[in-house]
Length: 187
Image (cartoon, rainbow, N blue to C red; front, side, top):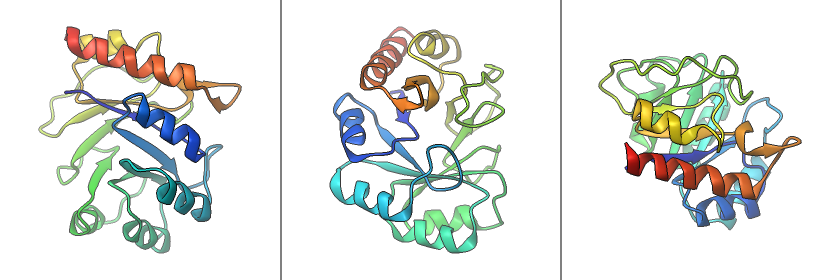
């Protein structure tokens, strides 16, 4: 079954909406980005909403990494520099590791666009790799069904594709999830 992740959520109500519409994961950005949350905001969302959350960070510091390991995330998604053994440390905490490189230790490989969260389209070719592959980069409710049917990924991940004027749009989130699920049923 296809995994659907809605990334860049910035408040508890939108996280709850995404889960209620069928999202499998919600991503909370913890490093510099237009969608970055403070650790206080992260803790509030995690305490307020039941569901599987993913900490999303690029070039995460050691201190932040240790903090993320202690929080009740289901997975940690690492972009950029990933020091040796960090993925092992994620596993040691019972969490899944999502990497943007073809790291054989990762539970999931995320194939993202050139600038994560920008909506820029990546090359939608599925490499041969033994780990589950999630597709991101330029996805939207208008194209996710086609991408799922064509590439048969294990998951899809969206951020800017479900936004209007820089804010998450509940209607677009619902449409994205629905279209992704229809694509999975057709694949």
